[in-house]
Amino acid sequence: MKFGLQLGYWMMGPEDPIELVKLAEDVGFDSVWTAEAYGSDAISYLSWVGARTSRIKLGTSVVQISARTPACTAMTAMTMDHLSGGRLILGVGVSGPQVVEGWYGQPFPRPMARTREFIELLRTMLKREGPVTFDGDHYQLPLDGGSGLGKPLKLINKPLRADLPIYLGAEGPKNVKMATEICDGWLPLFISPDSFDVYADSLENLRPGFEIACPVQVVMNDDLEQALSTVKFMLAFYIGGMGAKGRNFHKELIGRLGYADAAEKIQSLFFEGKRDEAMAAVPDALADAVSLAGSRERILDRLQAWEESPVTTILVGTRDPEVVKLLGESG
Image 1 (cartoon, rainbow, N blue to C red):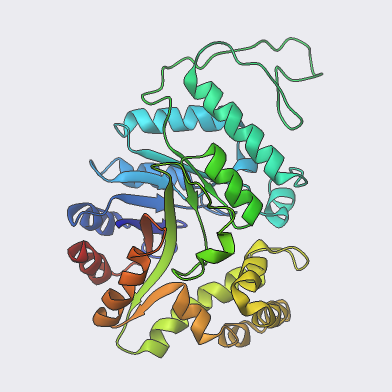
Image 2 (cartoon, rainbow, N blue to C red; image 1 turned 180 degrees about the horizontal axis):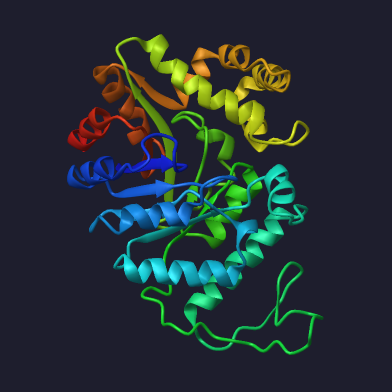
């Protein structure tokens, strides 16, 4: 089992977490990860910490497909990989209709087809075998219409790794299956060691070396109720607020895990502005299942179940140096 440090969004904690990142690097963490929604971007944040480290891998969990063209993403990945000495893990994801259409102004329909084309184009560009042409439903190079003066181009710089690892953030079973087919890894969300059966069909016949890097909130506190309250806050926010009322992938996933009624209640309370009540409505069992919470001894004991699961890397959600030390020592 490998560990990654999940920083998430910039400003969600100390403004500059470099000391925590350096500690993670020193105690043997494999990677550090940043995220984006509609605030801070993942790449700037990751570059900021990556420039002051030397060994730890640098992952995005995730950059959003609608925020960048495949070409911009290829250029960014190539640059980051060179500057970091080959440490980049590029995690991408489609986000949801609320963000895609409301923030980026891009159409959301057929997200899986768009994702497949995006990753195909990204890999083609990084291979740099010649000028790129592409005639897809979502992307065309050169662009159809316009001035008519577009010409096929090739990435100017030679990538350090043309096959740099690409992971996909995915929650729906079909999307997870696609990740196993076209990506090097999968970034799940809100899953427990004993609930991977909901993805049994999606994870059949995994290729050797396929990675599953799972974000897990880790809260060390001898008072289990207090520890779980931190997890409940995060769950309530995602189930209630990170998605449209009629289409919230996080809420749908919680339903597949067996908590459909609770998820419905949490979302209703959140939309009514009753956020404290929404947090209180998160079942203890759910919060406990998808996290590592409690005393040092309890965290280490429950860590064994994750080690026996299909997960290859736990992306540790924490700002606590003692948690980083504990998990570093456990490895």
